[in-house]
Image (cartoon, rainbow over all chains, first blue to last red; front, side, top):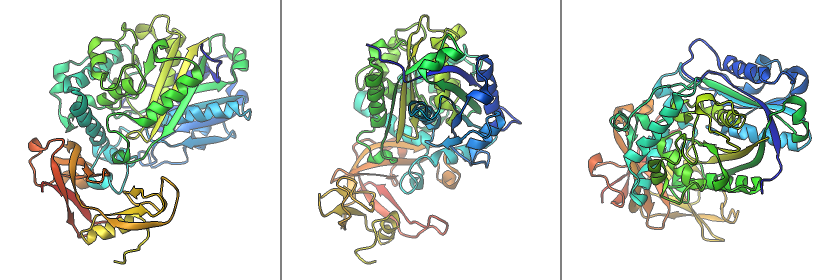
Length: 390
Length: 132
């Protein structure tokens, strides 16, 4: 039995994702907020929104910290309390969970949660170095490991233990690039082939360029309220019915396994239990495909298939649009793009569109229950949320 | 270096400068901490001692880095792996002295040291792995 909602999402917004020259992160966040405000005419943001929780990974990109009040200022929310949450690539998944806690505590009736990152004005080498800050300094960064390198270690181990192939990983990229062509806000709206993915430049063997998500600029946000108040703002809220979060060692080498993210398994179990749903009940999911291997591991960690069977699931077409459980209809981090701080609430934005039948060409027909899976770093943070339509 | 320096990353690397692979061991529950931490993360005891580890083990996974952060660009492409030591603990490190094409999961490796420390922060020396 599906359990009662924790909070309701009454509106959501997203900036364009892509290489957006000449704008600051704060302006991208204002774009996302404008969309969320305009989608919800019954909301008076200045009066109704009581607090802001935003995910933002790094001050290095824009030489700008103290993001909470900056974004509150640029969205008309001063003097409301505004907090930045940093959990690497899971920053805004954690911001969403923090917003849920703020509503459930009774302290706030309506809050905005979201995230932002402006990355593309930096060189690839700089971004590689900034992202690596979310890994362990004295043993991982110090030995030349990068984020592609850490996920490559998982891929090598998965290939060795389960026989997963580079072609199966490439199929994740092909699927998500196809979905991205159906999303006007996606960074790279371009079909690719398995051959093109397999022939692309090696970044960290066995991962090649098309196994990696994109360096992207973007912002996203959600308006949350107590389920009893949702009708005041909209006739079609989306309810968050499960929220899970867990932590693991920052160093990949200290973890139980290289082929599975324990924090994601635990977060998923907590979210499923809270929601009263099982993997078979899901109609649509957005998972953290920062690298193609990460999507295959997510299938396994979230119980879409058994351990080591992620490669089979992608081959069988189960997770394509039109399949039994479409995964990353937005295009995912792979083709929609991965402005790291914005990703968690961008996943929730897509699920919001799907469960309110607003996802246009990529709509999963009749989707009622959705899930988002947001991972920080190489898996030291994981956040899973489960949603249902009104 | 004294045998009882604080249980810190800096102490770990000072031992590396002496070509020693050292970990913290909890005197209460026996847990070995690699990297060393100021308290036992299993039982929370601060009653710890340093032990020297045998730097030999098997490669459990590896990657060859082609796109490197700036300070490693002159080395690219280079191989980095995770080695499981004989006591079951794991440590990441660069794998040197073997062609990347010939690196295999399960191969035997042993630790070696480059004792001179970097002149910039963090002023640590380096360890790496190579075939025995």
